[in-house]
Length: 637
Image (cartoon, rainbow, N blue to C red; front, side, top):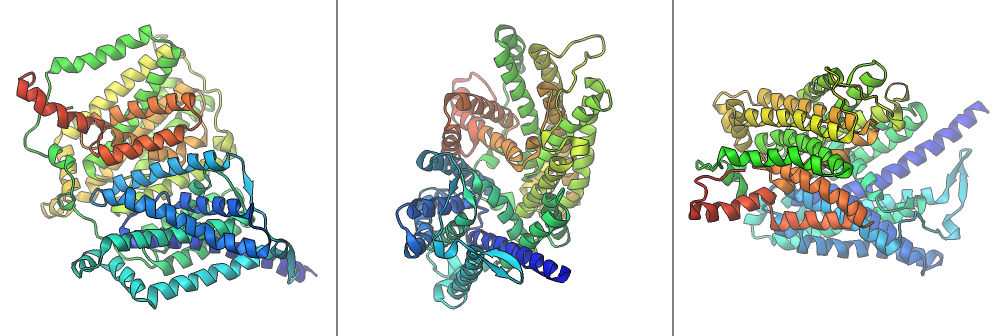
């Protein structure tokens, strides 16, 4: 009898793992196919999965019975494909010549837009998708009770995989797709219609995502935002298997599906961390994944961008030093006239500015895109929170230790990350960030788990200076952030910063000149981590409470958005972007429930119309006009 119980339990768990792997494969195969041909890591792929689930929900309201369900299952991904065609031809095609970061931002803005449109059309409630009676029951296999729909999934998913294999390996179009994935420049030189091919591949990737959503919908609930949860797992799968490799997507899906099931049974407290541990381990040992290959990384000089040319031009512009005192005077005087809400809002902007400027030391100065900065922000915040609540530390000593712990965490993580470049670097920082999030989220005994830390005491500073009030906290943050930003400005303007820019422009050339590229990148990573940790410490003092949400990957996306909004290739760009982002967030949330839709549309316009950001646009338009009139001899923001 014990053996029979074990066998029944094992049967249920194995089939559950395979079902999860089937869902993941359908989604990740489309994601990796799009990346292999278009070289775009599509954040909106999860939203296409969500649309597939919503479309089958809408269709099954009118189509009943087994025949109706089959029609809905086939029609839903076709509807998603039509949406994908509009996205590719209307939006993505406009920015293929831009740097990868702008493509990521565009697809991220689509996530915000599609999620809110789903709320408008389908409502914010969780939706359950009905199944025909024929596949809604359960059967007993080796003593284990297994839903019939699980068996349906385990039949349909492999069938779709076989169709995918046939199309890619047995048809002429499939051979062209694989050839383009291997060498896009050669395929273009041979006269292949790249525009039509890109549209076809993006649409077919959307079909796979939509079919995955339609197939998963009846087994799960669907709600706005479900695509955001799915896309991270899909990233893990494609990175582990190898970007652009379908066999890698299959093996990666099986590994992750199995690991999730085993983790829930064996390590329920840290099952989230196991996935990211595997991702980190594989990327460290084999950066391009189990079945992938090294990606070509273009030097800055090979990319079709105008803003870098402005920044690295031998002609530099600067305003009169006295003009720089105007913003400082405003920052000192405005809080005296503004209420508590605006004082709090300005404090948020100051902290966000420090995060964005520190992040841009990596992106704009060094050319490294990190999706894990929230980890160091969280380390700084939890350092202050834990020292203040459990160690009895005063705010200032705790805050001074925040950048130290942030630097230590960045030093350890950066040691592994700077060995990689491009999208592999970004994905490894994402993995480390999510690993830190998973640990903090589950470690109830130390971090408080998902409850976080509440009631952080704010004691007076040395000399009896109180910072507990909103206004006093603002001035305290202004001093800390002001000093920090000035230090970062001097670092950027120093010979060290000039070397980082040389690495960004062409790291191979810098290496030939004797520069220890990895050491410089590691030093930049540690510096950014230290100041990000300091910002996290300020956040803990301002809010007097913290939660694991500040470490989630969506928090890491914020400095990316701020930097691009303001302008990557100017020092003040991230500060301006932080102000715009925080103000938009605060007022849009109060003004409309559809704030994500409005924010997404604004970001979309920024990418398409202002690739140089707000500051880049101002520089471009005002530089000529002001110098022509002789008002300023030089112009640099």
